[in-house]
Image 1 (cartoon, one colour):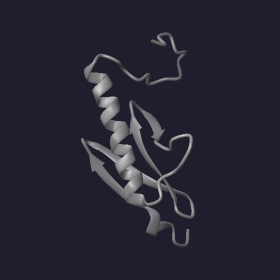
Image 2: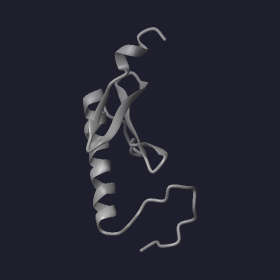
Image 3: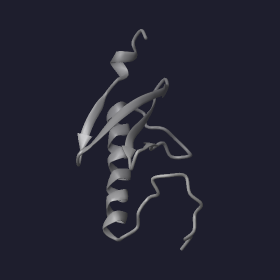
Image 4: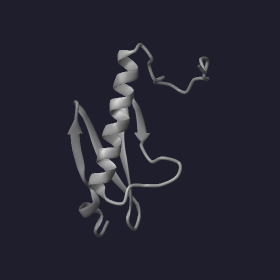
Length: 86
């Protein structure tokens, strides 16, 4: 656990706690819980270079999920098959 507490950064955003996971040197991932699921916000191509950047990227994902909810599109809270692929 040495040094791990230095990387344990979190922030509340729109009622959701975002925390940061250090993946490797200079690679961080923003994580939050949504509908009972843990969501990691790392894109397929890169991680954030700093904890604050990881939090900002997670905020963008949260904003997208909230916008989808406002439009009546809900992210499944269980593992389900994708029925609508429009």
